Image 1 (cartoon, rainbow, N blue to C red):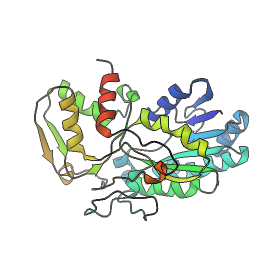
Image 2: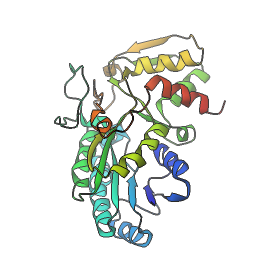
Image 3: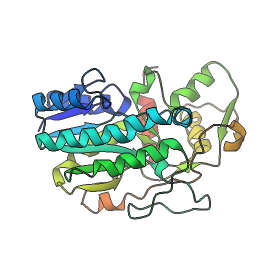
Length: 284
C-alpha cells in the first residue's frame, strides 16, 4: 500500500510519514497545491498511490474571518479538486475535518455523533464543512473529524500548538490566561496517525469522528500540562469573549467516536495519557 500525504510538513503529516516510512510519499505545497488542479492531477497520475491522505488545510481560524476566499480555496474547492484527482487514479481519499463544524448549541453536554446536523459558528468551520461535502463526490472516501491536534512537529512549525504556546509563556515567565468555557478533546497527532491505516483497511468508507478519549476545557488541559511538569504556578481562568477573537469558537464540540469503535477498532487512549506521552517525547 502506497500513501501519498498532501500537507506532509504539518504535525499530522510528519507523524504519518514517520509511521509509514517507505510506504509514504510526502507531498508539500510545491508538489501538490490544492489550488492548482491541473498540476495536482498530473502529480497523482504520475505517482499512482493507493491512498491519498489530505493533511493540508487553511487552519488559521481568525484569519479565515478576514480571508474567506483563501479559506474556501483550500478547505473546500481544493478538496473537490483532490477528490476528482483521486477518482481519476482510483485512489482512496482520506480527508481530515474538524470539530468546528459544530458549535451553535452552547448548552450541549454530550458528544456529537456523525449523524447529527453540523452547525458551524465561523468561516473556518463553514469552509471545512463544505470540504467534507465536496470530498464525497468520490465514493472511496474517509472523512475524519478530529479536534485540537498537537504533535511534536509543533516544536518547530510556524503555527506551533497549544502545549508549546503554554510552555513558551512559562519559559518567559508570563502570566497564564486560559479559557474555561470551551470544552473539547485535544488529540495527539501521533495517536491519530496510528489509527489511519487500520481504518483504511476496513474499506468502510464514510464520515468518522476520531479523537483522544475523554474531554476537557482548555483550562483543564493547561492545568494538566503544568501538573505533569511539576509546575504549581497559577492560571487565570477567562471567558472566550474576553479575548475578543474575530472567529466565534464552539463552546462544546466533543465528538463521539462510537462509529469508529463499532468497526472493531480500538479507541484512542485518553487525553491525559496522550499528553503525558507528548511531554515525555519532546526534547528538554
